[in-house]
Length: 302
Image (tube, helix red, strand yellow):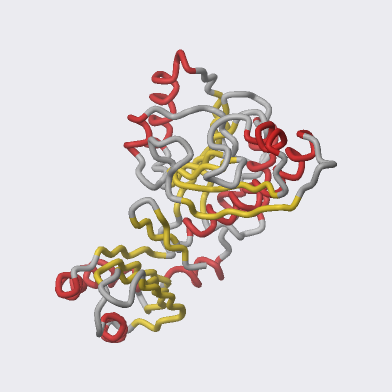
C-alpha cells in the first residue's frame, strides 16, 4: 500500500501555527519613516511582528528592502481587507510589495533526469518537514526516479525529452503545471534546456542547480573543464532560470576545496554533495518568501 505523505505532512498543530502567519515583502526607494510606518500599519491590523529583516543598497538614494513575518488572529478573514488598507501606504512610499500567507502552502513540481541526488535531498527535506510545500508531481525524462517518487505517494510523470521534441514536451509539462496549480518548478539536475517561451511563462518561479560556482564554467561539462583548469575550489550555484543560460539571479552558492589528487570522478562526487545542499537551501528560502529579486540580483533574508 502506498502512503500519500502529502496528505500527512501537516499535523493539526502545524496547521494552527501557520494559519495566522503572514509575510510582507517590500522594495522601495530608501527614505526615513518606512520601518515606522510598516510597524504602525501591522500594529493597527492587530498583528504581532515575529521576524524582521531589512537591507538598504545605498544609504544615500538607494533601494530599501524588508521582509516582515507576523502573526495575526483570524488572518484568513482579514487578509483581503489588510491588503486593500495597505494601498495608500504603498503609494506614499512608492512600494513594490507582496503579502504571503502561511495557510497558502505552495505547490512544487520537480523536474529530474538520470541523476537522483538532488531529488533525494529535496524528498528527505520535505519528509522531515523542513520544506514547507506540497510536492505536486515529479516529471522525469528518464524512468530511474519513478520507484523512489511513487513509493512516497507522489505522482511521477515520464516525459521523454530531447531538443527535437522540446515544444511538445513543454506543452505536456505546462498542462501538468496548470492541472496541479503549481507555484514553483525545481530543476533537480534536469539536463534539458528550456525554451524562451516556457521560461517567460514562469518568471522567478523556476529554480535550477548548476554544478559550478557561477560565473565560472557556464554551460555543459563544468567538472571536466574545472579539472583541466586545475582549480583548487569547486562549487555549485542555485539560481532562477532566465533566457540567458546559467545567468539568472543567484539565490545560493557553496564551495569545497580540492587539489591535484582529485580527478574528474572525485570532483563530481564532491560536487554532488554541494549541489544537494545548495539546491535544498535555495528552494527552502523561496518557499519561505525570503527572496526578493532586484534586477539580476537577489536579496536573501536567511
